Image 1 (cartoon, helix red, strand yellow):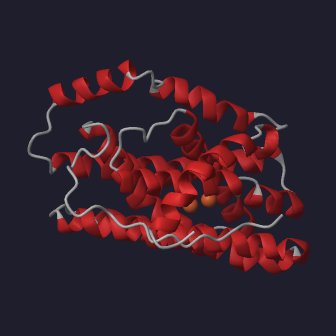
Image 2 (image 1 turned 180 degrees about the horizontal axis):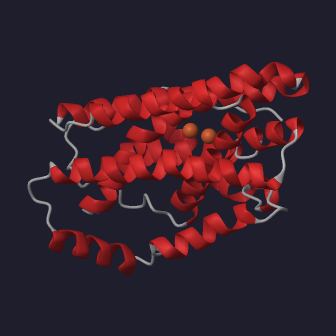
Length: 270
Ligand SMILES: [Fe+2]
Ligand SMILES: [Fe+2]
C-alpha cells in the first residue's frame, strides 16, 4: 500500500469571522479545539510508529507514508493555531499540558500499549474524517478551513488501517485494544472539550442562549446528535471482529479528491 504525502500550502484566512463554520460559534470552536489538540496526538503517533517501524520491515514504506501524512497535518494545523493566537486567544497551556501528558505515556507505558492508544486515536481521527466528508460538515465553512479539514479528513481515511495493521502484526488480544480505547478517549476527548471551553469562554458574545441556538442550528441542518455519533463510531470498535477496512471509503475518498485536489494545487501544493 502506498500513501501519497501531499504538501498543500493551505493558509488560514486573514480576516475570517470567529464563527467560520456557518456562523456557528460552538461548532467552529469545537473544530478549532480539535485542531489544537490533534497536533500533539499526531506527533505522538508518529513517534510511536517510528520506534516500532523496524519490527515489521514489510510495512516500512507504508509506515513512512503514514508518518509523512501526519507530519504535514501537524505543520498546517500549527498555522491555524497561530492565527487563533493572533486573534488574542490564549490556549498555549492546553497544548503544553497535552504534550506533557503524552510524553508521560511514552515514558510509562510499554510500546505495544502506546501503539494500542495510537490505533484508537486513528479510529477517532478517521471517524472525524468520515463525519466531515460523508455528512458534508464543511459545506458553508470559510474555504481555507474547508480545505484544511477535508484534506485532513481524506488522508485520515486513506491511512485509517495502517496503525491497526502494525498492531495486528505485533499481535494483541481484544481487551488490549479496548484498554487503548479507554486511554485514547481520556487523552483526546477531555483535552478537546476543555480546550473548546477555554476558547468559548474568551468569546465575548458567547452565552448559554447562543449555545442552544448553535445546537438547534446544527440539528436543523440534518446533522447527528452526539449520542448518534457515538453509536455510529464507537460501537464498531468494541466488536472483536473490528477492522478499519470493514467500511469501504474508496468512493468517498475519490469523490473528495476530485473536488479538493485542484484547490490544493492552486494553494501551492498537492
Ligand atoms: Fe492526521
Ligand atoms: Fe491519522
